[in-house]
Image (cartoon, rainbow, N blue to C red):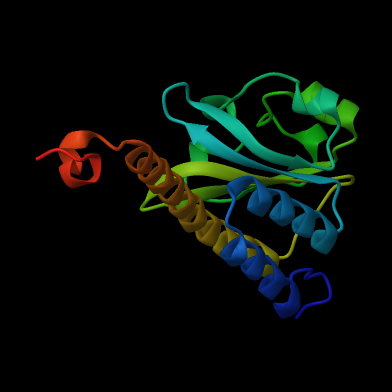
Length: 191
């Protein structure tokens, strides 16, 4: 591992275990955001899900960012960092030297020096983004970018898996709440 690599195998294992063992989406994304901030020694992290109806990136979780920055306004996918590059990470190593930010003044006011955007992809479709914020300018290693890509792919599978489980639970709860006579006539003494 090069000296500037931050994600070693132990951190990678912790991140993967967090994703794999969480049963609730909010719990998983909160823990993942905290782990990434700690492991990379950065300012903050946001995990976004794409709302296909509005083209807005909706925050599933934020960690390390102020309420003012979180509430700066809607994050529109078509104006967002890296959306034009589609499936590739975008590294903004210095926020003062880019035109890729939707809210550049808010980033500067927040004390953000650099931002990395990793798309979250599931079956060739972008379903969200993992965004990391650093206090200073940031020259992240290629190996850490590769690790973050793998993490975002696993995160994409986990997000879809969690959505399916939640939908199945709602269906199961609905079925269990319904006990019409015509489904079980013997139970209600008819016949």
